[in-house]
Amino acid sequence: MSYIDVTGKTEEEAIQSALAQLGMERDDVSVEILERAKAGFLGLGSCPAKVRVSYGEDDEPSACRAWKRASSSASILALRV
Image (tube, rainbow, N blue to C red; front, side, top):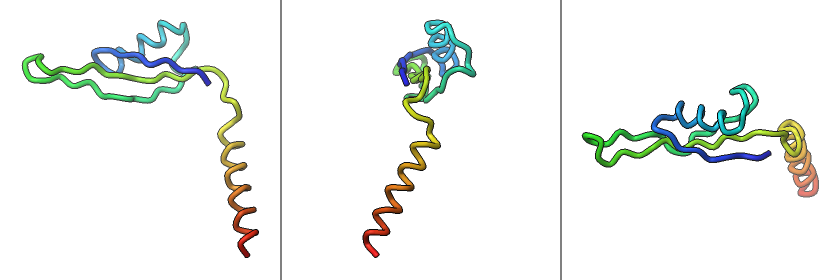
């Protein structure tokens, strides 16, 4: 899965900017908020929002990864018994 990190004045602005760059819809991506926007005092010390937008196919579905983790944990437990 590929991703881009984008900043904006607000979280929503950063997400919209990333979607525009990618030419994708909101339903086609996954969004992780890395840093929330901070207004600061009278505009001083303000900090933009930073989001990571992931897109594309997973290397393998998350259910598959969870099953592999559970399977390997079960086999380790079986060896201990």
